[in-house]
Length: 194
Ligand code: HEC
View 1 (cartoon, rainbow, N blue to C red):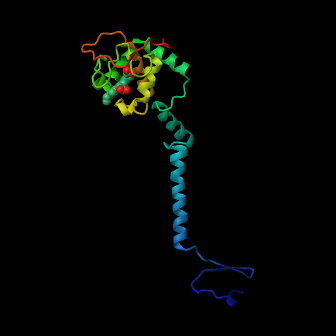
View 2: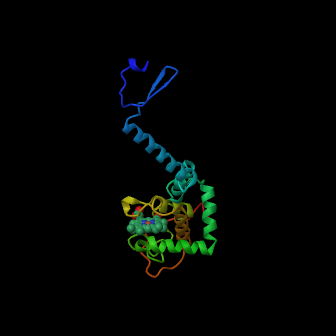
View 3: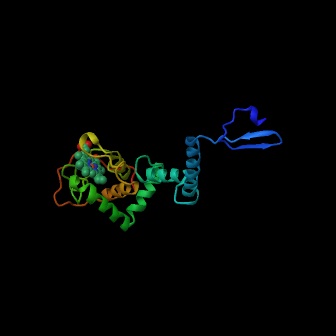
């Protein structure tokens, strides 16, 4: 019975068939969080399901694409890379883009025509690292020789740029630079090459 309970006289009371229902509203802080979470959920769903928000799959794909664009860990086999390098080497436009990459990033140390400066002459048959084959050139361009002042370009340039620059260096072989730097390293004949 209603009158047997401690009821706040100001509080609205329902009574139906002798069953008393009190109305205790949830505390303000609780309601505030509750309604705020509904508002937030609407915004969240709108952004991620209907709007411009990326799904987790898209976010993953974007991260993978960013990683693949950098030349850190190519997942192509050496044979595939050789084929890619050859495709660049034999395409004048792509080779020209390699020249542009070289002029921008490498010429400060190797001269625009590869004649050398801080870095060695890249046109002669003398090589410090590897045998001058395209594979050896790609390796040294990608990994660098940090302790000798040749930066590793894999983490800096895009994969395509590293490949194009390596192909361009390969095309310098046998050319005559304006101011050739004295040979460094051994005379080697490239073994596995195009
Ligand atoms: C800051 C100067 C610097 C820059 C920039 C630089 N290099 Fe080098 N590079 C060097 C030095 C120094 C060496 C020689 C390392 C050694 O003595 O072992 C070298 C070596 C090389 C070699 C091997 C030469 C050999 O005889 O084995 C290649 C190939 C090469 N660089 C290509 C490039 C390319 C391509 C770029 C641009 C993407 C580039 N380098 C940018 C300084 C540089």
